Structures are given as C-alpha cells and as structure tokens.
Image (tube, rainbow, N blue to C red; front, side, top):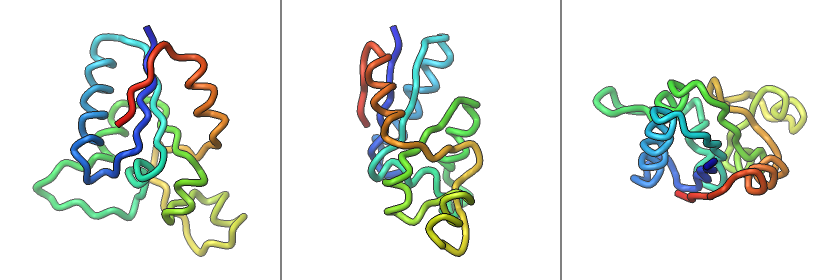
Amino acid sequence: MSTLLLITAAPTSIHAWHALGLAQALQAEDQEFRVFFYQDGVQVANNLQWVPDDQRNLSVEWQKLSIRLPVCVSAALARGITDQENAKRHQIPADNLAKGFELVGLGELADAVQSTDRIIQF
C-alpha cells in the first residue's frame, strides 16, 4: 500500500513533526510513500530558518531520509522561499531553498494523489 504524506503544517507545529515520524516509520518498514509540502508546510524548506542548538532541525531530519522532497513552488514563493532559477525569473535578489528540497508545480500533487492508495494530511 502506498501513502502520500501531505504536509501543510508549519515546522513549528507538532503535526509537522508527526509527519516526519510517520515517514521515518514507513521508511524503516520499507513501505512505499511520497511526501508533498504545501501551504505553511513549505516553510520547512527555508534554508534561512534558525533553530536553537538544543532543538532538532526539522529540515535536516527530512534531509536525512534521502528521499525526494517536493515543495509547492507557488506556496513557497508566497512565503519568501525560492531556488536559484525562480529567484532569477522573478527578480528576487537571493535564493534560500534548503538542500534536498525541490520546487514543483501542483501537477505533481495531482499525480501523487492519483497514484497512491491513501493520503494522510498533517
């Protein structure tokens, strides 16, 4: 059974951490899953977020999974997150997309919805 984890919760939300925990558990069990970061969930891909030394960094924890990390480009741009290509296209002075994350269109979400057995939104 394949699962889509649709992450809409901001990184400061406990729900965002539950999404990571489920992803880690699915990966440990060799279960098929995909993730998609949307709405406030895209903030996890902001490389300029500061995290105190005594706290875990959610972005780094997602990167450790070594999976594809698609982020909605429109939601990201609306929240000040961009990659080098979109920064140039939209005349934004710098990029700040965290390593391992990828800006994609909503077509990718539509494809994920159609190709998975269940969707879990956080």
